[in-house]
Image (cartoon, rainbow, N blue to C red; front, side, top):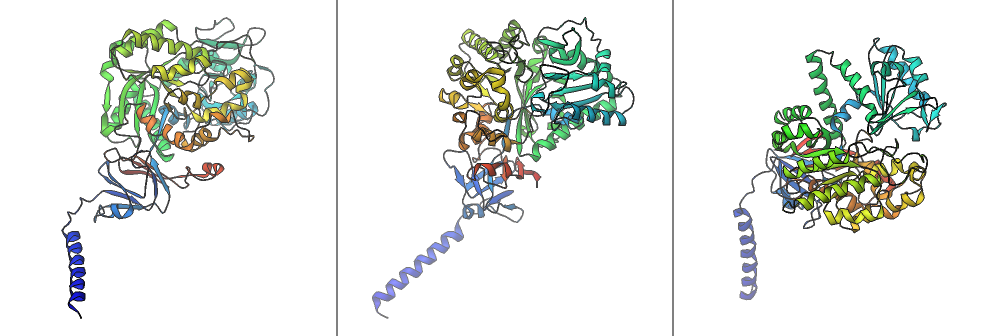
Length: 574
């Protein structure tokens, strides 16, 4: 061998030795508790939008990258999940749902699948056969616009109570509309609530009556109050042990349902101080699988007395945060309760209902801004949205030193064109529900007419064009808390008959995912710890069986949740 060849061979050999030595001397990374690998990880982090793998230590993401990069975090005790090419995304954030109502809905009659009024009457009849005399029959989920036949007789498509009362003479019955904004009661329930022909309509509510002036058994908005009070009086007869057991069961059922659907954080749209105490107990005992961001649903006087006692930041390892007030300005479109600038096309005698007086809402805004609380207000109709934007703007102008308030309009479903730019200009978040668009779509034009529907119904692109942030959710149990149908509705606006509801307002898949992740985190002041799969953030991850970002759109609905991971812990596995 020549000297030249020998020298070159020796040089190559020494180089390999140095490389091997450098690897052997490299500091060993501290093992992770959890590593996900072999997946498609969409991070919703603009700096690193997609990866194969990630590593979690305790409850926090420590690294995101390739399989080989994450291998160095695998130790003897590391839980390694092979994603087998499946999609992992930041844990879904439902920005508007009713947590305890999700649990309660599972303890009563599920009316969502009833095809008509006769089906509901039959369901109640069977429930009565199993009930004790005097026991209340409770249900939720009916929607007259989704029935395959109109009941006879009816008022505005709503049934008279007579058939219902006939099958339940000794059992009071209270059946809540899917929206929660109206109810049907039988004669026994009305008797216990002292409702007669002479009972006046309350402010912000309506007792639906026959042409002769008799209550037909349907109650809109605040008119439901006496019936709910009568039901509460019945519940108060239970022992303290029974009451507490039921309250805890509701939370457990709701938690299990949400986590099984891939929800890692839920914005609870209005709970009492008493219920928040229960949430806190669950959080501090590490009994909550998901995270709750809770809006306080109390009146102004109670807020003045107790508001700052209930400011809670990240209790139970970030499982409970409370820093928001929830109010209502109107009702729901399906019940003709949304407050409109012009009369309903299909009910010309009505412009809907203002359910909370304007002065009361102004006081709530003052309480919120002076105590550094976020304000979230339910507003569906165009009149309601205009009035609440006016109230917000007045509060902002009166307190110019207050910045980054992130006040929200919950639903923002029907807007006058003049008010669309105001969301971006005022920095008001539009907390909307994609699934409402396609669920309500078949009858929105019937309610509003084509022009108003086209100009202002679920105008996601118009809002985003004007700089508004949209966060997404389901309003469960109004709709199923499952985010997949909501994501599908957001990107397709496709109705059951195959038509599309003003599809130019559809979100892109990237926009829809952001609305369900980082935008929800922003809407709760939690974007520094939630909403993207970024090192340093909490390890909240949802793994799906289908790649909803790329599959043909009709396959999106086939996606199932394989894993729900909250704080690095597998809370659900299919």
